[in-house]
Length: 503
Image (tube, rainbow, N blue to C red; front, side, top):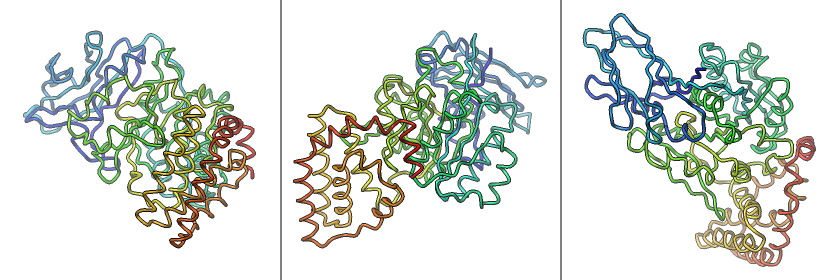
C-alpha cells in the first residue's frame, strides 16, 4: 500500500517565501535540497516499517531529474516532453542514514515550468490513524481565524491528501470570545462536523490544552481517534505538517507506536532561523542545541543532531506543536495544573520513556520566548521549575537542586537591583512551598491577576523578604519535595481536572 509521506513544498506567500528553505538554484538545475524537502533516512528507517521510498512527481518544463543521497547523484532520469507524471524509486535498501533529495534540470525550450508531487512510502500494512487537533486560545480571534482557514482550505477540503479525512479540530476558548467573532463563525458553520469550539475558564495553557485532551478522549471511541496534537493559537502553520505526521504514524513500527512526534519551531520574525528542534532540561536549565540555526544552508539543515535518532530519550517538545498517542495521553496521565509555562516540559519529561522524534516539515513559525515581556511569567518560571525539580530527582538531590536553582536567580536580581523581579522570584518560591494541595485549590485566573499586580518593594523590604524566603526554603524544602512527590499524581487525573476546571 502507498502512503503520502511528504509533499514537495515550494515558497508560499501565505506561509513562507524564503526560497532557500525549499530549494537552491545552480544554473539550470534546481536542487530540492532545502530544509523542507529533505528526507531524513535514519529516522524513517528506525521508527517505521517503510519498505520502499518513491518520488511521485508531476513536472512540466524540465528535461532531467536526478536523485541524490547526501551530495552524491545516485540516479538520473531523462524526462520526456510528452510525459509529465513519474514514479521513481529511491535506493531505500542501500542506505541507513543521511538524506535523500532530488533535482530538476530546466528545459530551455519550454517557457512554462510546473512541479508538484510527494515522497511516497510503500508498506504492506497501513495502521489506522485519526488525530484530534487541540488548539488553546485566549482572545486571539484573528490568529485562530488565520490557522482555521489554513487547516480547512489547505488540508480538510483537499481530497487529494490522504490525511484530509483523518483530522478533527478542538478549539479551546479560554477567553470565551469566539462565539461573537463573526468571520470565524462562517468557517465553523461550514465545518461543524469536524471542528468544535469549547468554551473554557481561563485556566492558562495547561488548563486549555488539558481540556482539549479530555475532549479528544471523550470522542476517542466514536471517532476512532488515536492521537492528539497540541498547537499554539498564534503559530503560523506549515499545513504539510499534517501530511507528514499522518504518513509517519501510519507506518510506525509496533514497538514505537507511542512515540511522541515533536514539532520544530522556526522564528516568525526571521523565518529561516530554526529556534528549536527538541530541547533538554536539567536542574531548571533549558538547553537548546539548535537555537537560531540558519536552515537555508544545506550543511545546517543536515547537521548531525537534526537527522540522528540518538537523542530520542533525552529531548522534549514545546506545545507550539506536539503530537501524542492516546495511549500516552490518558484519563490517568494528564498535565499538572501549572496555568502556564513549563507545563509542556513537565509532561514531556514525564513521558520521555516513549521516545520522541522531530521531522523536518512538522514545523510552525512562532514568536520566540526571548521576544516576550518577562512580567508575571517570571513567577511561573520560578514556581514551576521548582515543582519540576521535585518530579525529576530523588528527594535528597531535589533538595540540593532547589536551593542551588533558587539562590542563583534571586541573587543576580538583587545585585542588579531589579526589585519587581525580586518580588516575583520571592512570590514564586513562597507559593511553591505551599504544596500541591494549595496549588490545585487556587482559582487560576484570580491567582494570575494577583501575580500580574505584584509591585516592587523598596530596597530594605526587598532584602528583608529575600532573606526571609531563603530561611524558609532551607527549613521547609524537604517537606515540600515530599509533598509534590507524593501528591502530584493525584492531580493529573481526569476527576481532579474536571473539578479544577469547574471552579
